[in-house]
Every structure is written in C-alpha cells, then in structure tokens.
Amino acid sequence: MGSEASSRSSALLRIGLALLLWTRFARDLDWAGALTPRFLALSAAFFAATTAMLVGAFSRAAALASAAVAGFLYVVWGVVRGEPGVAHHHVYLLVVASFLCALTPCGRSYSLDRWLAVRRAERAGAAPPPERGNVWGLRLLALQLSSIYLWSAYDKLAPDFLSGARLERILLWFYAGFDLAALPGFGPAVVALSLATVALELALGVGLLVPRARRHLILPGLAFHAILYPDAPRADLLGHDGPLLPRLPRSRRRPPGHRPPRGPRRRGSGAPARSRVASASAPRRDAMTRLRIAQTALLLALAALAAACGGDAPPEPEFRWEEEVVEGPEEPPPRADARGGEDLEAPRATRDALDADAEAERLERRRREALRRDEERALEQRRADAGRRPGPRPDEGARGEAIYPARDDAFCDERVAACYTARGAHVGLTEEEFGVAAGRRLERRLEAGPRSPRGVERVDGAACDRLSEVCYERDGASVARTREVFGRQAARDLAARLGARRGEPSGRGEAIYAPRRGVSCDERVAACYVADEAHLGHTRDEFGRPAALALERRLERGPRARDGVYRPVDGAVCDRLSKVCYDRLGASAAVTRAEFGREAAVRMAERVR
Image (tube, rainbow, N blue to C red; front, side, top):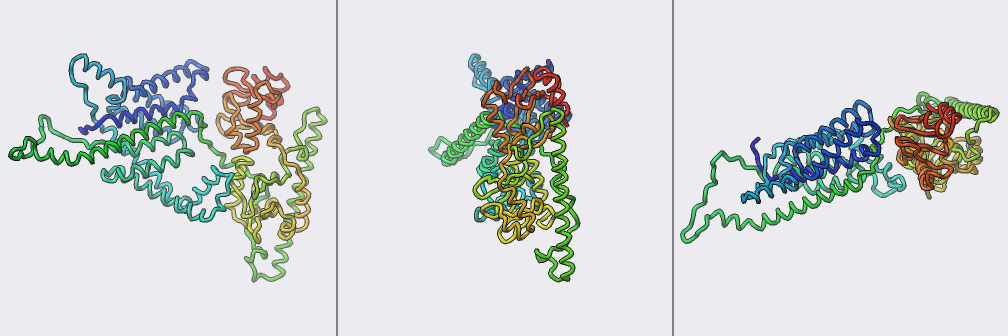
C-alpha cells in the first residue's frame, strides 16, 4: 500500500467528478424546486459538498461528503422511490468514484488546500510541500474501471450484438431521418464496428492494468468515448478520465533512511556516469511531459463540455416493453403459403383450401373492423347527445386513416402507426412519427417473421404489410401491387384511403396515463408533462416528432395563449388546451378545479387511467 506518486492526476479526477455530479443532479436539486425543509437540506448539502470538492477546500472530506449525498440519492431516489434514471449504473459509478477519490491525495494539487499550504510555507520560510502522496486509492479506481470495460465486453458477446443487430437499431433510432440501411456496405460496416467495439473494450479492460500497454491505449480509449459522447449519458464521461487514471508516475518503495547509490566517477569528471545517461534521455522526458500536458488539457476540456452541455439532458427513457398489442388478431399457427413457394408439392385442393382460409380470415378481420367503427360512432353520438365534447373523427383531422409521405422515399400509415420504404418497414422512422411504443410494436411484428399474419414481406421489389394489407413501392402505396397480393377488396380500400387528409398529432384518444413514474401523458392533446413543465422529450417518445413540434409551437406562443402552458403555483403546470393541471404526482384534481372549475376537474378524473 505504501506507493507514492504525483497528486495532480488525483486533483484532476476530483475536479472532473465535481463537474459530473453537478451535471447529473444540479437541475433536480435546484432551490427553486425546494418544497419541503428536507429537500432544501439535501440540496444545500449537495451543493456545499460538491462546491468544496471542486475548489479543493478540505478536499478529501468534501469528496467523501459528495459521495455520501450521491449515494443517498441513488438508494432513496433511485432504488426506493424509483425516480427515472437515478438507479442507473452511471450514477452508481459516480458514487464509487467519488468515494475512492476521497482515498487519494486529491487536495495536494490544483486546490484551495494547496494554495493555503504554500502560503503557510512561505510565511514560515520553508519549502512548499511536495505534490506527492499515497495513490493506492487510484489503484482501486483503475481496477474498478477495468472491471467496467470487461463486464461491458462480456455483455456484448451475445449474438445480438456481434451480428450488428443491436448497433443497427441504435443507429436507426438516433438517425431516423437518414436512410442508413440504403448506404452501400452498411451491413458489413455495422458488423465490423460491433466486433471492433468488443475488441477495444477487452483490450482496455486488460491493458489498463499493464504499464507497457497503457500508453498505446490512451488515444484509442479517448477516441472511443469521444464518439460515444454525443449519444451517451453525461456520466459516461468518467470513461474519458479512465484511460488517464492509471497513467501515473511509477511509484518507488524505499525503506526509511535509504539513499540512492551514486554512480562511479571518472577521472577529471565531477558528475557520476548516470547523470550523463539522464541528460541523454532528457528529450524523451520532454516529449512525455508535453504528452501529459496535452492529456490534461483534453481532460479539462471534456469536463467543461460535460458541464456546459449536460445540465439540460433529460434522464434516460425507460420504455414500456410489455404494452398490449391491439392492432390485429391473435397469430394462428404457421401454415404453408403457395404464393411464397413453401408448399409447392401440396395438392391443388390443399392450396385452394388454404387460399379460401386466407380470404375468410381477411373478411372476418374487415367485419370486426367495421363493427369496431360502428361502436365508436355510436359512442361519439351518445357523448354528443349528452352535451359533452366528442372526440375528433378521422375525417376531422384525427389520426386514423391517412397514408402520407414522411420524406421522399418513405411513407407512413396512420391506421397501423407504421412507416415503410420500398425495402421494408422502418422502425426508426415509425418511432419518430408515432412514438416509441409504435416502434416497439412494429419491431415485435418484424421479429415474428414476414409470414406471420402481421408480418411485412418483400414481394417483387415492394414491401407488403399483411396487417394493413397495403403494398409500398418507391413512389408510395401501390394500388396495383396491393390488388395482386391482397385482392380487389384491399385495393379498393387503399384507393379510398389515398385521398384522406393527414390527421393532427392530437385526437388519438381520451386517456391520461403515466408511461413511467413521474411522467403524465394526455392522449387528447398529445403532450406529456413532468412535475411542473411540459416535456418535449417524453412527448416525442410517446406521440412522435410531429406532436413534439406542435407542443413546442404552443410553448413558443407563451403561457397567455389560448392553448398555452403555464405554472399557476410552484410545482404545478396547467394546459389551457386540455384544461388539466399536473403536479409531481400526476394529474391534479385540486389544481384543475382551482384553475378551470369543478366541471373540468370531473372530466379530468374520468379520463385518468
């Protein structure tokens, strides 16, 4: 344990961790949102500890206090209360790193403690204290960092990642507006990137513990995290610090009273032979010094970038993976299909029977759809007769029937909430237009295979959806190809829908629901709210990009507009368009009654699910 080295790397780690703690928790702990004395005390403790940690006042005690506050937030807010994004491994890593930082000489460099120590030494006429200390805490942190890379690589050894499928889904989600799959060599490039990622993480996990390998892994590690930074949570910036942490001066263990031996002297020479060797290696030391200065500057720049850009980053979304699929009948057992060539040896009578079964299935589905529409129209009529405002109908701008172009070569169907190109269904564009839930449903349909009753298959250069019974070519929905694949009735239905006007983002339903803890969404106005503000990110996840743009336009018009969003009191938000108010617990009947009257509160209570 008795290893000494420079304390400057520990000081840089202390500064970077303080900035990351501000980036992650400062917005959640601002004093403007302090509704109780306990919250105010927690906020004061957080900012006092992290500020002292940043400037280096009682550095080790401040780092320990910051770790304690962050650990409290992780356990109480994240594990016990289930706040979104708090019980995350990035937050856990911040807690562990802050605790291990308290075990290092992090206050002997770049700190207020160092400045005061130098001032005391000057007044006493003594030499300044050395910027060195026991760095065994950094050894523990390097071991923690190595284990992160190794377990991350182990998780990526699954076939889903090695085949490139997981990375492809990530790219299509973040860059849904670009048809990346159409680029030449996109598939092999994704596979190569996946394999390179696993190889680099394995190399970092092992090589950071090997002194000779560290210098060769610093630049690849920095480049790897610099590429991930625009899409990764801000706490992942600790990975930028990671390759630099083990880059310490080699520690020397010497017994008390030990003096280094002097080299042999030559005649006529007043210096030992080893001094000439040291002078010969001076250029190499100068180059290493310049490299360390460049590393330090890059680290501080990345930490400043995290503090500047990460404060407004929303918590990571927690998707509803198990939502009920309602867009089609139950999937029957797989059967042979003569058109696909799977059962060419079957007798003609068998193929005719299968075709008849398929036609009967389509007729039964259309009959159920017609009954559902009749029931909806009857419900709308009853609501109108009762004097209540009916929900919007498809021909009045509600989402439901239109097929519209999302871009030059992609088209979206409001009936099944899915988007397509001539090459197939597009999950990323579907999430962008209709929300994350619609994208997950489409992804499950694609995983079921093209031959399932809800599958999407390629037929002679066109993408055909068995659920909506529509075929898409490069120019859009094709009536002729739909007639060839699904029959005349499907073609007539498609021809009638081609003239439908695109619906508004709102009007999808009437429910007010909570997709996750702390978030409330209103289907009537297609908007989501968190605590005391309308949230564009959750609105985009639940209702798609058009709904988020519509909400953004409403926010730009100001709180006094007829459809504005405003804060009546601290900790609450009200929407003039829906006449509903929300607080930290969700839709609030008390605030709604105070702002819009008793009738609005009753209507709101009926819509809460």
